[in-house]
Length: 240
Image 1 (tube, rainbow, N blue to C red):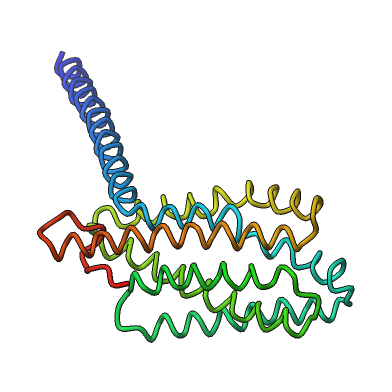
Image 2: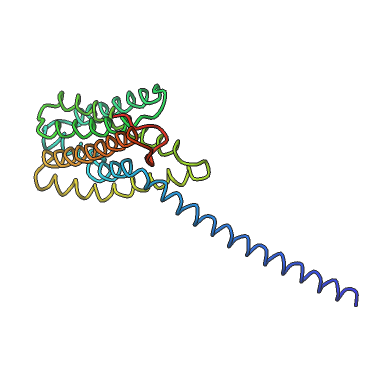
């Protein structure tokens, strides 16, 4: 009889523990959903960063797909020149990363100027048929690319609460990487229709338009802050 009561009590305790585990799992799932929604609101409260990221990831980030076509079809060069072009971009990206690391803090000006410089260099690259000039422009592309990405990610992380920092950055990377395959198809189609000249021109113009709109929006926010208190897009004042 005593063994029977022990088994009954053990079953009740185990059942209550299982119920508690299911309840905790449901609570954790609800908290995760709430945190994800809040992270989405936090990321979309910085539309300038999201908009530039979406446009550049779609039209400009896949310029590396175009480099083999640029070297072989446009410049009519060898594999050695293709290696030089890729190395030029890598050297510029390294210099841009070092420059971003040397900055005292993340800057909206660096975000906009980095995206605008990246897009301008690709627009200038469109009509180029000399590999030396192309390598020089790709050096600028790499420098501006690192400057833009480092500062935009830093602003997102520094303005997000600690509990949401990882989620906000994951949404940013989702936009960055998620639009890239679409951009690859677009870049390939444009290169097939009008060569690398058309593909680089579209990428450069799209990025410049997005950068200009973001700069205008940030300037409006700064002027509004000078007139009176408004909700800012970041904790630091936009300086353009």
